[in-house]
Image 1 (cartoon, rainbow, N blue to C red):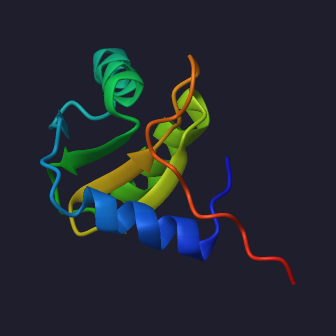
Image 2 (cartoon, rainbow, N blue to C red; image 1 turned 90 degrees about the horizontal axis):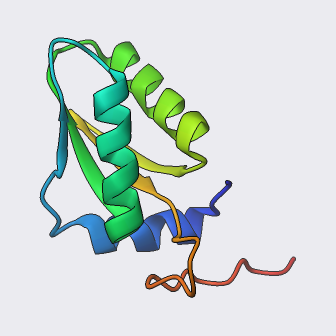
Length: 103
């Protein structure tokens, strides 16, 4: 799923007040962590994930893997926080994204 810059900016503003709902610890991105991320995406659509550790490249890999495995969209990687978005499958999405601008 691809987001435009305006959509990403909108989602970042919505995520500003959110607290992280999942934490990736020293064991890394396990199946249990992926399941927990999926459950929270289904419940909230937009979530923050806290990653312990100082390796920025590893955090970027986690973001990539989560988004590809769960068909989600990366919104932002801010320090040790990952912001991820996935619209709900059932019914209508609770978050309304700005329409892409026509060129």
